[in-house]
Image (cartoon, rainbow, N blue to C red):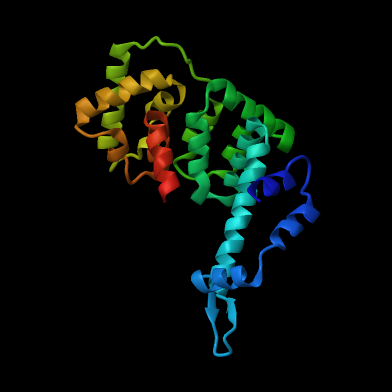
Length: 243
């Protein structure tokens, strides 16, 4: 039966007749057993198993989310990223983490591809929309991140990494007087340095400050997301998945 279901979804569109035929084989006893054993139904005083409305709404939302995931998965990665960025910008601060995720975890050519796709889809640049739609201290950081084309080679200048670790540490220590993202050096380091270089920077940061940078900037959400995506992307996405 599983193979038949898979076959009904193969090719373009859905073989509705095949799918109806498969689901139609479910007999009354099987259907009743399902209704009485799950939390999606309740039995009323007439011994009728009816939907629990809240549970039904949850299932509808889950199917819609799954539908959205499938549609996104079939897209070219550049278009997918472009559309996700546009949606995040339209929805506002609650989805700004998506900007950090895409800008900080993609390879340089992948991010450039997303920027090209954005031009084609929306007749403007990501940078333009970030500049016009994002407000607050994170605007400069996001413009710099989405504009970045990072070096991806193996060369790291350790002395520069040590110096930049101190720069970041000092900016975070002075956060009470000046927001870290108002510091041009912080934006510059996070947006232009290679990820291998930043790995050294974050290592030296911990030596200087005694804490990981993402812990020190815990109250600055967008800065924290950017640092996590640059330093430990796998850990970051595991946390996102488990929320």
